[in-house]
Length: 316
Image (cartoon, rainbow, N blue to C red; front, top):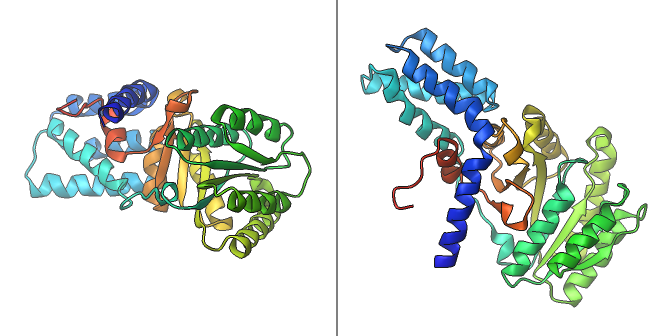
């Protein structure tokens, strides 16, 4: 437990530094509004609206946050702009509340499909996830079902070796559904805890993608009906609103149960985590703030907002 606390604390400080660009983008602008206005008026709200939208929190979340702020200012008879800061922070947390984010797949025999466009760090993320599951004592099998991208199989093999997980498939141009079929058979025969499937995310050809995912899902339903199912979409946080658009499009072709946001450390657009949860109601389940396996962690909205506003917990 103490070890886990230490790891969490270590990740929190990495999150604080990883969110530095987003903080500079959103929080410093916000604070200059809180400190620069002598009273609360329409212009004050308009300035805040601009900062939130420019910070990639999304239009919907921004309006909801400001509606909440206006209501509370009225209700509590708040006169000082600076007194709005904590209300705003709490409201951002509230926007991100999508109920209990479940990680059931870790506790059950499960099949996890991972989808994402080229360049978002999907294969690396799967490798890190495999490493995390292995360090928790889980038996993991990886399926290289992204057979369209050159070198995807080789890249996944490197991660599989690193995580000491078995890899099925990996030949460029082979049929992804056939790879999944073989991987399911292997997962059942070897009593694997988790089967992680690396799948292509070709959004420019949605019809083919939909058909391919349908085919894979049919095989899993038929061959492994007892498996718990999870479908995770990997998105690159540096792309901001494009990531939100991708999430919407993936959700049209597959039943997305969670989001993994990568490259949070290299972006000023970290507010996109708020937009995704607020606008789609799909939980961000993991967040990546660096290159190492430990830089992929379960997403905690409370810790995220605290790190963004650099507010450590009292007991930390």
